[in-house]
Length: 458
Image 1 (cartoon, one colour):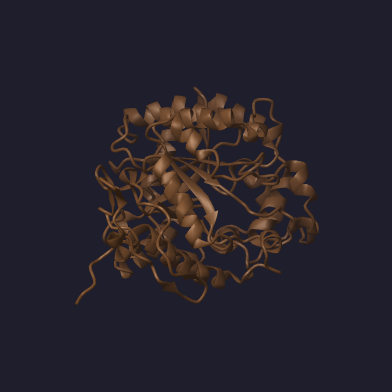
Image 2 (cartoon, rainbow, N blue to C red):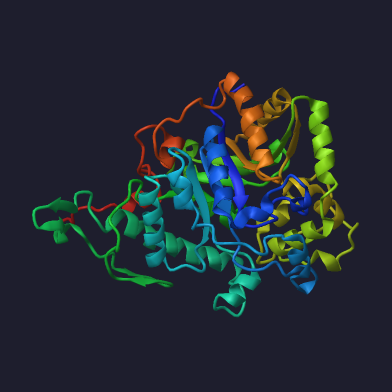
Protein backbone atom coordinates (compact mmCIF):
# COMPACT_ATOMS: atom_id res chain seq x y z
CA UNK A 1 0.00 0.00 0.00
CA UNK A 2 1.22 3.49 -0.88
CA UNK A 3 1.81 5.86 2.01
CA UNK A 4 0.74 8.93 0.06
CA UNK A 5 -1.90 11.30 1.41
CA UNK A 6 -5.32 10.95 -0.17
CA UNK A 7 -6.41 14.35 -1.42
CA UNK A 8 -10.08 15.20 -1.08
CA UNK A 9 -12.23 17.66 -3.00
CA UNK A 10 -15.97 18.05 -2.54
CA UNK A 11 -18.03 18.31 -5.74
CA UNK A 12 -21.05 20.58 -6.08
CA UNK A 13 -22.82 22.72 -8.65
CA UNK A 14 -25.11 25.64 -7.88
CA UNK A 15 -28.14 23.74 -9.10
CA UNK A 16 -30.76 21.24 -7.95
CA UNK A 17 -29.63 18.12 -9.82
CA UNK A 18 -26.00 17.59 -10.78
CA UNK A 19 -24.28 14.21 -10.53
CA UNK A 20 -27.48 12.52 -9.34
CA UNK A 21 -30.78 12.65 -11.23
CA UNK A 22 -34.03 12.93 -9.31
CA UNK A 23 -32.56 12.59 -5.81
CA UNK A 24 -33.62 16.14 -4.88
CA UNK A 25 -37.00 14.50 -4.22
CA UNK A 26 -35.57 12.58 -1.25
CA UNK A 27 -36.92 14.04 2.02
CA UNK A 28 -33.38 14.46 3.43
CA UNK A 29 -32.08 16.42 0.45
CA UNK A 30 -31.48 20.15 0.76
CA UNK A 31 -30.51 20.51 -2.92
CA UNK A 32 -33.34 22.98 -3.52
CA UNK A 33 -31.55 25.39 -1.16
CA UNK A 34 -28.73 26.03 -3.63
CA UNK A 35 -29.98 29.66 -3.78
CA UNK A 36 -29.40 30.20 -0.04
CA UNK A 37 -26.08 31.50 1.19
CA UNK A 38 -26.41 29.50 4.42
CA UNK A 39 -26.45 26.32 2.32
CA UNK A 40 -23.02 27.17 0.93
CA UNK A 41 -21.62 28.28 4.30
CA UNK A 42 -22.70 24.98 5.84
CA UNK A 43 -21.07 23.10 2.97
CA UNK A 44 -17.76 24.93 3.46
CA UNK A 45 -17.75 24.30 7.20
CA UNK A 46 -18.45 20.57 6.74
CA UNK A 47 -15.63 20.17 4.22
CA UNK A 48 -13.12 22.10 6.31
CA UNK A 49 -14.03 19.97 9.32
CA UNK A 50 -13.29 16.95 7.12
CA UNK A 51 -9.91 18.43 6.13
CA UNK A 52 -10.87 18.53 2.45
CA UNK A 53 -8.38 20.34 0.25
CA UNK A 54 -11.09 22.21 -1.65
CA UNK A 55 -14.67 22.54 -2.74
CA UNK A 56 -14.92 22.12 -6.51
CA UNK A 57 -17.88 24.00 -8.00
CA UNK A 58 -18.91 22.80 -11.45
CA UNK A 59 -20.89 24.93 -13.89
CA UNK A 60 -22.83 24.95 -17.16
CA UNK A 61 -23.68 28.04 -19.22
CA UNK A 62 -26.71 26.81 -21.12
CA UNK A 63 -29.88 24.79 -20.52
CA UNK A 64 -29.78 21.06 -21.24
CA UNK A 65 -31.94 20.81 -24.36
CA UNK A 66 -30.42 18.06 -26.49
CA UNK A 67 -32.66 15.27 -25.15
CA UNK A 68 -35.84 15.21 -27.30
CA UNK A 69 -34.68 18.55 -28.74
CA UNK A 70 -36.11 20.56 -25.86
CA UNK A 71 -35.42 21.53 -22.26
CA UNK A 72 -38.53 19.90 -20.73
CA UNK A 73 -36.87 16.84 -19.16
CA UNK A 74 -34.07 18.90 -17.63
CA UNK A 75 -36.58 21.32 -16.12
CA UNK A 76 -38.80 18.58 -14.70
CA UNK A 77 -35.82 16.94 -13.02
CA UNK A 78 -33.88 20.10 -12.19
CA UNK A 79 -30.86 18.72 -14.06
CA UNK A 80 -28.39 21.64 -14.22
CA UNK A 81 -31.38 23.78 -15.22
CA UNK A 82 -31.70 26.19 -13.45
CA UNK A 83 -28.13 26.88 -12.34
CA UNK A 84 -26.57 29.91 -10.65
CA UNK A 85 -23.19 31.61 -11.08
CA UNK A 86 -20.53 29.60 -9.20
CA UNK A 87 -18.26 32.55 -8.40
CA UNK A 88 -20.47 34.65 -6.21
CA UNK A 89 -20.64 32.59 -3.01
CA UNK A 90 -16.91 31.92 -2.78
CA UNK A 91 -15.84 34.99 -0.80
CA UNK A 92 -18.61 34.33 1.74
CA UNK A 93 -17.46 30.72 2.17
CA UNK A 94 -13.89 31.92 2.53
CA UNK A 95 -14.98 34.22 5.37
CA UNK A 96 -16.21 31.27 7.48
CA UNK A 97 -13.21 29.02 6.79
CA UNK A 98 -9.44 29.37 7.12
CA UNK A 99 -7.91 26.70 4.91
CA UNK A 100 -10.47 25.20 2.52
CA UNK A 101 -9.68 25.95 -1.11
CA UNK A 102 -12.20 26.75 -3.84
CA UNK A 103 -11.85 25.38 -7.37
CA UNK A 104 -14.36 26.97 -9.70
CA UNK A 105 -15.36 26.13 -13.26
CA UNK A 106 -15.23 29.02 -15.73
CA UNK A 107 -15.32 28.68 -19.51
CA UNK A 108 -12.49 30.14 -21.57
CA UNK A 109 -14.81 30.25 -24.59
CA UNK A 110 -17.14 32.92 -23.22
CA UNK A 111 -14.88 35.06 -21.04
CA UNK A 112 -12.45 37.81 -22.00
CA UNK A 113 -9.05 37.06 -20.47
CA UNK A 114 -8.44 40.67 -19.38
CA UNK A 115 -11.60 40.87 -17.27
CA UNK A 116 -11.41 37.23 -16.17
CA UNK A 117 -7.85 37.56 -14.88
CA UNK A 118 -9.04 40.38 -12.64
CA UNK A 119 -11.96 38.31 -11.30
CA UNK A 120 -9.66 35.48 -10.29
CA UNK A 121 -7.03 37.80 -8.81
CA UNK A 122 -9.80 39.43 -6.76
CA UNK A 123 -10.96 36.05 -5.46
CA UNK A 124 -7.38 35.10 -4.67
CA UNK A 125 -7.05 38.34 -2.68
CA UNK A 126 -10.32 37.78 -0.82
CA UNK A 127 -9.61 34.11 -0.04
CA UNK A 128 -5.97 34.81 0.88
CA UNK A 129 -4.66 32.51 -1.81
CA UNK A 130 -7.22 29.72 -1.83
CA UNK A 131 -8.60 29.96 -5.36
CA UNK A 132 -8.32 27.51 -8.27
CA UNK A 133 -9.71 27.55 -11.80
CA UNK A 134 -11.15 24.54 -13.58
CA UNK A 135 -10.56 25.42 -17.23
CA UNK A 136 -13.38 24.31 -19.52
CA UNK A 137 -14.14 25.16 -23.13
CA UNK A 138 -17.92 24.54 -22.86
CA UNK A 139 -19.70 21.85 -24.83
CA UNK A 140 -23.30 23.06 -24.91
CA UNK A 141 -24.78 24.41 -28.14
CA UNK A 142 -27.39 26.17 -26.02
CA UNK A 143 -24.64 28.18 -24.34
CA UNK A 144 -23.17 29.19 -27.70
CA UNK A 145 -26.51 30.36 -29.07
CA UNK A 146 -27.25 32.42 -25.96
CA UNK A 147 -23.77 33.91 -25.70
CA UNK A 148 -23.30 35.45 -29.12
CA UNK A 149 -22.50 32.53 -31.43
CA UNK A 150 -24.77 30.88 -33.96
CA UNK A 151 -23.51 27.47 -32.85
CA UNK A 152 -20.79 25.93 -30.72
CA UNK A 153 -17.21 26.23 -31.95
CA UNK A 154 -15.76 22.92 -33.15
CA UNK A 155 -14.17 20.87 -30.37
CA UNK A 156 -10.52 21.33 -31.32
CA UNK A 157 -10.96 25.03 -32.13
CA UNK A 158 -12.28 25.62 -28.62
CA UNK A 159 -9.00 24.27 -27.28
CA UNK A 160 -7.00 26.48 -29.67
CA UNK A 161 -8.86 29.49 -28.29
CA UNK A 162 -8.20 28.21 -24.77
CA UNK A 163 -4.45 27.97 -25.42
CA UNK A 164 -4.25 31.64 -26.35
CA UNK A 165 -6.56 32.56 -23.48
CA UNK A 166 -4.14 30.88 -21.07
CA UNK A 167 -1.17 32.78 -22.52
CA UNK A 168 -2.92 36.12 -22.05
CA UNK A 169 -4.04 35.30 -18.51
CA UNK A 170 -0.55 34.12 -17.54
CA UNK A 171 0.95 37.35 -18.87
CA UNK A 172 -1.48 39.38 -16.78
CA UNK A 173 -1.07 37.33 -13.60
CA UNK A 174 2.67 36.74 -13.76
CA UNK A 175 4.34 39.41 -15.86
CA UNK A 176 2.59 42.74 -15.67
CA UNK A 177 3.42 43.78 -12.10
CA UNK A 178 6.83 43.12 -10.60
CA UNK A 179 6.93 41.67 -7.11
CA UNK A 180 7.96 44.99 -5.54
CA UNK A 181 5.78 47.24 -7.74
CA UNK A 182 3.54 48.20 -4.81
CA UNK A 183 5.56 50.68 -2.74
CA UNK A 184 2.84 52.03 -0.40
CA UNK A 185 5.22 54.62 1.00
CA UNK A 186 5.43 58.38 1.02
CA UNK A 187 3.45 59.78 -1.89
CA UNK A 188 3.69 56.63 -4.06
CA UNK A 189 1.40 53.64 -3.99
CA UNK A 190 2.77 51.77 -7.04
CA UNK A 191 6.00 52.42 -8.93
CA UNK A 192 5.08 53.03 -12.61
CA UNK A 193 8.48 51.73 -13.70
CA UNK A 194 7.60 48.31 -12.28
CA UNK A 195 4.19 47.91 -13.93
CA UNK A 196 4.34 46.74 -17.55
CA UNK A 197 1.90 46.38 -20.45
CA UNK A 198 1.55 42.80 -21.63
CA UNK A 199 1.39 43.78 -25.32
CA UNK A 200 -0.49 40.71 -26.52
CA UNK A 201 -1.50 40.71 -30.19
CA UNK A 202 -2.75 37.28 -31.14
CA UNK A 203 -5.23 35.39 -33.30
CA UNK A 204 -8.18 35.62 -30.92
CA UNK A 205 -7.21 38.31 -28.41
CA UNK A 206 -5.58 41.73 -28.37
CA UNK A 207 -4.56 42.90 -24.89
CA UNK A 208 -2.06 45.76 -25.09
CA UNK A 209 -2.21 47.22 -21.58
CA UNK A 210 -1.21 46.54 -18.00
CA UNK A 211 -3.08 44.24 -15.62
CA UNK A 212 -5.66 46.29 -13.76
CA UNK A 213 -4.97 44.51 -10.47
CA UNK A 214 -1.98 44.12 -8.21
CA UNK A 215 -0.64 40.57 -7.85
CA UNK A 216 -2.41 38.19 -5.48
CA UNK A 217 -0.79 35.65 -3.19
CA UNK A 218 -0.74 32.84 -5.75
CA UNK A 219 -0.70 35.16 -8.79
CA UNK A 220 -1.89 32.37 -11.10
CA UNK A 221 -4.71 30.38 -9.47
CA UNK A 222 -4.27 26.63 -9.18
CA UNK A 223 -5.13 25.28 -12.65
CA UNK A 224 -7.49 22.32 -13.01
CA UNK A 225 -8.71 20.54 -16.13
CA UNK A 226 -11.19 17.75 -16.76
CA UNK A 227 -11.11 16.95 -20.49
CA UNK A 228 -9.92 13.47 -21.40
CA UNK A 229 -10.22 13.54 -25.19
CA UNK A 230 -6.79 13.44 -26.89
CA UNK A 231 -6.70 17.22 -27.25
CA UNK A 232 -7.99 17.59 -23.69
CA UNK A 233 -5.25 15.32 -22.36
CA UNK A 234 -2.63 17.37 -24.20
CA UNK A 235 -4.07 20.56 -22.69
CA UNK A 236 -4.01 19.02 -19.20
CA UNK A 237 -0.42 17.88 -19.66
CA UNK A 238 0.64 21.43 -20.49
CA UNK A 239 -1.40 23.41 -17.98
CA UNK A 240 -3.10 21.39 -15.25
CA UNK A 241 -1.98 21.08 -11.67
CA UNK A 242 -5.13 19.12 -10.80
CA UNK A 243 -6.91 16.78 -13.24
CA UNK A 244 -10.48 15.61 -12.66
CA UNK A 245 -11.35 12.14 -13.96
CA UNK A 246 -14.70 10.44 -14.61
CA UNK A 247 -14.21 6.67 -14.78
CA UNK A 248 -15.85 3.75 -13.06
CA UNK A 249 -12.90 1.31 -12.88
CA UNK A 250 -9.35 1.82 -11.57
CA UNK A 251 -7.72 0.29 -14.65
CA UNK A 252 -9.56 2.77 -16.89
CA UNK A 253 -8.35 5.63 -14.71
CA UNK A 254 -4.81 4.24 -14.88
CA UNK A 255 -4.86 4.44 -18.67
CA UNK A 256 -5.67 8.15 -18.42
CA UNK A 257 -3.23 9.02 -15.64
CA UNK A 258 -0.34 7.20 -17.30
CA UNK A 259 -1.04 8.87 -20.65
CA UNK A 260 -1.35 12.41 -19.27
CA UNK A 261 1.72 12.06 -17.07
CA UNK A 262 3.73 10.83 -20.05
CA UNK A 263 2.54 13.82 -22.08
CA UNK A 264 3.49 16.15 -19.19
CA UNK A 265 6.99 14.71 -19.11
CA UNK A 266 7.30 15.26 -22.86
CA UNK A 267 6.22 18.87 -22.30
CA UNK A 268 9.07 19.34 -19.82
CA UNK A 269 7.02 19.12 -16.66
CA UNK A 270 7.47 16.89 -13.62
CA UNK A 271 4.67 14.32 -14.10
CA UNK A 272 4.44 13.86 -10.34
CA UNK A 273 3.38 17.50 -9.99
CA UNK A 274 0.02 16.71 -11.62
CA UNK A 275 -2.54 15.51 -9.07
CA UNK A 276 -5.38 13.33 -10.34
CA UNK A 277 -8.78 13.32 -8.64
CA UNK A 278 -11.41 10.73 -9.61
CA UNK A 279 -15.09 11.42 -9.09
CA UNK A 280 -16.62 9.06 -6.52
CA UNK A 281 -19.94 8.85 -4.72
CA UNK A 282 -19.69 7.38 -1.22
CA UNK A 283 -22.70 5.96 0.62
CA UNK A 284 -21.53 5.14 4.13
CA UNK A 285 -23.13 3.98 7.37
CA UNK A 286 -21.97 2.24 10.54
CA UNK A 287 -22.32 -1.20 8.92
CA UNK A 288 -22.23 -2.55 5.38
CA UNK A 289 -25.87 -3.65 5.64
CA UNK A 290 -27.02 -0.19 6.75
CA UNK A 291 -25.10 1.43 3.90
CA UNK A 292 -26.65 -0.92 1.33
CA UNK A 293 -30.09 -0.10 2.72
CA UNK A 294 -29.31 3.60 2.41
CA UNK A 295 -28.28 3.14 -1.24
CA UNK A 296 -31.48 1.21 -1.97
CA UNK A 297 -33.46 4.06 -0.44
CA UNK A 298 -31.69 6.61 -2.65
CA UNK A 299 -32.19 4.51 -5.78
CA UNK A 300 -35.97 4.72 -5.32
CA UNK A 301 -35.76 8.40 -6.30
CA UNK A 302 -33.55 8.07 -9.39
CA UNK A 303 -34.94 9.60 -12.60
CA UNK A 304 -33.87 7.65 -15.69
CA UNK A 305 -35.15 10.41 -17.98
CA UNK A 306 -33.18 13.02 -16.02
CA UNK A 307 -30.02 10.99 -16.46
CA UNK A 308 -30.64 10.69 -20.19
CA UNK A 309 -31.23 14.45 -20.43
CA UNK A 310 -27.93 15.24 -18.70
CA UNK A 311 -25.81 12.81 -20.66
CA UNK A 312 -27.42 13.70 -23.98
CA UNK A 313 -26.27 17.28 -23.43
CA UNK A 314 -22.78 16.28 -22.26
CA UNK A 315 -22.21 14.02 -25.27
CA UNK A 316 -24.10 16.10 -27.89
CA UNK A 317 -26.09 12.99 -28.69
CA UNK A 318 -29.87 12.80 -28.31
CA UNK A 319 -30.30 9.49 -26.52
CA UNK A 320 -34.09 9.70 -26.91
CA UNK A 321 -33.87 8.77 -30.61
CA UNK A 322 -31.72 5.70 -30.00
CA UNK A 323 -32.89 2.22 -29.11
CA UNK A 324 -32.62 2.27 -25.29
CA UNK A 325 -31.40 -1.33 -25.26
CA UNK A 326 -28.93 -1.18 -28.16
CA UNK A 327 -25.25 -0.63 -27.29
CA UNK A 328 -24.00 2.91 -27.83
CA UNK A 329 -21.31 3.44 -30.46
CA UNK A 330 -18.64 6.16 -30.43
CA UNK A 331 -18.94 9.00 -32.94
CA UNK A 332 -17.03 12.28 -33.04
CA UNK A 333 -19.19 15.09 -31.66
CA UNK A 334 -18.51 18.61 -30.42
CA UNK A 335 -19.61 17.57 -26.95
CA UNK A 336 -17.44 16.27 -24.13
CA UNK A 337 -15.73 13.47 -26.00
CA UNK A 338 -14.20 12.00 -22.88
CA UNK A 339 -17.72 11.40 -21.53
CA UNK A 340 -18.74 9.62 -24.74
CA UNK A 341 -15.55 7.58 -24.67
CA UNK A 342 -16.33 6.56 -21.08
CA UNK A 343 -19.32 4.52 -22.23
CA UNK A 344 -18.08 3.39 -25.66
CA UNK A 345 -14.34 2.81 -26.05
CA UNK A 346 -12.54 3.04 -22.69
CA UNK A 347 -13.93 -0.26 -21.40
CA UNK A 348 -13.57 -3.09 -23.96
CA UNK A 349 -15.31 -5.54 -21.60
CA UNK A 350 -18.68 -3.83 -21.55
CA UNK A 351 -21.21 -2.52 -24.07
CA UNK A 352 -23.37 0.24 -22.63
CA UNK A 353 -26.95 0.90 -23.72
CA UNK A 354 -28.68 4.27 -23.13
CA UNK A 355 -30.94 2.69 -20.52
CA UNK A 356 -28.00 1.15 -18.66
CA UNK A 357 -26.13 4.45 -18.72
CA UNK A 358 -29.09 6.34 -17.23
CA UNK A 359 -29.58 3.76 -14.50
CA UNK A 360 -25.86 3.67 -13.70
CA UNK A 361 -25.41 7.45 -13.44
CA UNK A 362 -28.61 7.98 -11.46
CA UNK A 363 -26.77 8.13 -8.13
CA UNK A 364 -23.11 8.20 -9.09
CA UNK A 365 -22.85 10.53 -12.08
CA UNK A 366 -20.31 8.53 -14.10
CA UNK A 367 -17.93 7.41 -11.36
CA UNK A 368 -17.89 4.56 -8.85
CA UNK A 369 -20.54 4.35 -6.15
CA UNK A 370 -18.69 3.08 -3.09
CA UNK A 371 -21.00 1.63 -0.45
CA UNK A 372 -20.29 0.24 3.00
CA UNK A 373 -19.01 0.81 6.49
CA UNK A 374 -16.15 3.26 7.09
CA UNK A 375 -13.63 0.40 6.90
CA UNK A 376 -15.15 -0.99 3.70
CA UNK A 377 -15.17 2.44 2.06
CA UNK A 378 -11.61 3.20 3.15
CA UNK A 379 -10.42 -0.13 1.74
CA UNK A 380 -11.97 0.67 -1.63
CA UNK A 381 -10.61 4.21 -1.73
CA UNK A 382 -7.13 2.87 -0.99
CA UNK A 383 -7.51 0.26 -3.74
CA UNK A 384 -8.31 3.01 -6.22
CA UNK A 385 -5.30 5.06 -5.10
CA UNK A 386 -2.98 2.09 -5.48
CA UNK A 387 -4.37 0.66 -8.73
CA UNK A 388 -5.45 3.78 -10.63
CA UNK A 389 -2.39 5.96 -10.12
CA UNK A 390 -4.59 8.75 -8.77
CA UNK A 391 -3.92 11.12 -5.90
CA UNK A 392 -7.38 11.56 -4.48
CA UNK A 393 -11.09 11.91 -5.07
CA UNK A 394 -13.71 14.40 -6.12
CA UNK A 395 -16.43 13.35 -3.66
CA UNK A 396 -19.97 13.94 -4.94
CA UNK A 397 -22.88 14.97 -2.73
CA UNK A 398 -26.10 13.48 -4.18
CA UNK A 399 -28.13 14.18 -1.02
CA UNK A 400 -26.72 17.52 0.15
CA UNK A 401 -25.52 18.01 2.80
CA UNK A 402 -26.11 14.47 4.10
CA UNK A 403 -23.53 12.65 1.96
CA UNK A 404 -20.77 15.22 2.63
CA UNK A 405 -21.54 15.11 6.34
CA UNK A 406 -21.58 11.30 6.43
CA UNK A 407 -18.23 11.17 4.65
CA UNK A 408 -16.70 13.72 7.02
CA UNK A 409 -18.07 12.08 10.16
CA UNK A 410 -17.50 8.42 9.26
CA UNK A 411 -14.94 7.98 6.47
CA UNK A 412 -12.45 10.75 7.25
CA UNK A 413 -11.72 9.52 10.82
CA UNK A 414 -11.05 6.04 9.44
CA UNK A 415 -8.71 7.41 6.78
CA UNK A 416 -6.97 9.55 9.41
CA UNK A 417 -6.45 6.45 11.59
CA UNK A 418 -4.75 4.86 8.59
CA UNK A 419 -2.57 7.93 8.00
CA UNK A 420 -4.13 8.59 4.59
CA UNK A 421 -5.80 11.95 5.29
CA UNK A 422 -4.09 14.77 7.16
CA UNK A 423 -5.32 15.70 10.63
CA UNK A 424 -4.58 19.36 10.03
CA UNK A 425 -3.83 21.58 7.06
CA UNK A 426 -0.24 22.27 6.04
CA UNK A 427 0.16 25.77 4.66
CA UNK A 428 -2.54 28.34 4.06
CA UNK A 429 -3.01 28.48 0.26
CA UNK A 430 -4.55 26.03 -2.19
CA UNK A 431 -1.29 25.57 -4.06
CA UNK A 432 0.43 24.54 -0.82
CA UNK A 433 -2.11 21.72 -0.58
CA UNK A 434 -0.77 20.51 -3.91
CA UNK A 435 2.96 21.09 -3.55
CA UNK A 436 3.71 21.57 0.14
CA UNK A 437 4.17 24.43 2.60
CA UNK A 438 5.80 27.52 1.16
CA UNK A 439 4.91 26.81 -2.48
CA UNK A 440 2.40 29.54 -3.30
CA UNK A 441 3.49 30.30 -6.89
CA UNK A 442 3.43 28.04 -9.94
CA UNK A 443 6.37 25.67 -10.18
CA UNK A 444 9.24 26.64 -12.52
CA UNK A 445 8.25 23.91 -15.01
CA UNK A 446 4.67 25.22 -15.32
CA UNK A 447 4.04 27.26 -18.51
CA UNK A 448 2.85 30.27 -16.50
CA UNK A 449 6.35 30.63 -15.05
CA UNK A 450 7.80 31.66 -18.42
CA UNK A 451 5.76 34.88 -18.28
CA UNK A 452 7.24 36.14 -15.01
CA UNK A 453 8.76 39.57 -15.36
CA UNK A 454 12.39 39.54 -16.43
CA UNK A 455 14.59 42.53 -17.13
CA UNK A 456 14.97 42.98 -20.90
CA UNK A 457 18.34 41.85 -22.19
CA UNK A 458 20.40 44.71 -23.63
